[in-house]
Image (tube, rainbow, N blue to C red):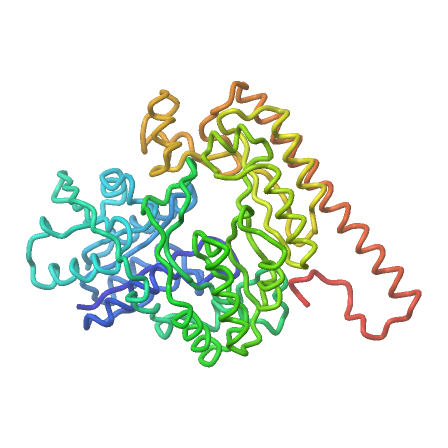
Length: 465
C-alpha cells in the first residue's frame, strides 16, 4: 500500500526528528509498503495545503501521531479537517500518547478511522495488512476503531520486551539536513544534533506522568553505539540527545552507556534525562569524560511532602546534593519545577524559586509551570474522581487551553491566589535571567573596547553566530 505519515508543524523555526513516526515508517517499509513523509514542519505548509496534496496524490492510508498537549490537540483538529476534506481521503489513523488514553474521544473529534494505542510498531503492521486485505479489525490488539458512529476498543497489545528487536527509524525518508539543526545546550555552530533512544519506559510512577506503558526495557549498548556511528557517518551527527523517559535508570546502566561511548573513540556530545538519586561524583565525572554536557532533571518540587504526594521517589536533600555535584562536574542541569500539585502552597513555591535562583547557570531560561493532569496519568483519574474534571471533552475543550495556565487547581488556594503565586515566581525568575543577560552584554561591550578585540563579530543574538 501507499502510506503517508504526517509530521506536523509546531510553529518553531527548527524541529527535532520525529522518532515515533521514524520507527513506524521503518516497520511499514520493511513490511513492503511504500511510505512517504509529509514534512509540514520542514516546509511550514498551511494546513489546507494537505487537502490539495491528498486530492492530487493517492494514498491508501494516512497517519498522524501526537502527544497530549493543548497545541497538539488543536493542531490535530486542523489537520483532520484538511484530511477529511479531501476528495480522495485515505484510511485515517492516529496514534501516540495523546489519543491512547481516550481513543473514543479522539476518534470522534478527529473523525479518524483508527487509533493505535501505545507502542505502534507491531500494531500498525498488522493494521495495514488488514486494510490491504479488506479484513476485519476486531482481532487486532492495540487499536480502537470507528464504524459510523460506533467505536470499538480492542485489548491492548503486550509491549515488545526486547528493545533490540525494534527496527531503527527510517532516517532516509526524512529531511535529515533539517532535523540535525536542532539546538541543545552547548551545541555549537559546527554541531549537528539528533535525538535517539537508549531504551523504552521508566522505572518510576509519578502521578503526573501520562505515559501508560509500564516497565523499563533497555537496548544493548553495542546496538546504541552502532546507531550513533551510523548517524555520524551518514549525516555528520556529533551530538546525541537521548530522549528516553529515563536514560539514568540506574547507576550501573548509566556507567555502561558512558563507558561504551568513551570506548568507542567517537568525539560526541550528548544529553539525557536523569535521576538525581542516582548521582554520584564518579558517575558524573565518567559521563562528563564521555561527552555528556547536559542532564535534564525532573525535580518538580523542593518540598518533601509534595514530592511524596506525586510519588516522585525523590527527596529535597538528594536534589540539592545531585545538582551541586552536577554543576561541580561541569555538566549543565535542566531544573524542571511544576506548581499547583496536591499540598502546594506559597511557601512550597518560595522554596522552589530560591532553589532555581541559587543554582541557575543561565544556560536556559528557568520558569515554573502549573501541573497538568494529562489523560492517562493518575492525576487525571484523581481529578475526575474529585469532581475537578469531567473527562476528555472538559480537559481539551474547556480546561487545558495553554500549558502556562491552570488546568485543574489541586491546592487549597483559590485560582486567583494560584495565579498570583505563578506571576510572582516567574517574574522573579525571568528578571534574574535577563538581568544576568544585560550584565553580560554590558561586560562584553567594555571588554571589546578596552581590549580592542579584533575577533569580535558584532552585536548579535547567539542563534545568529
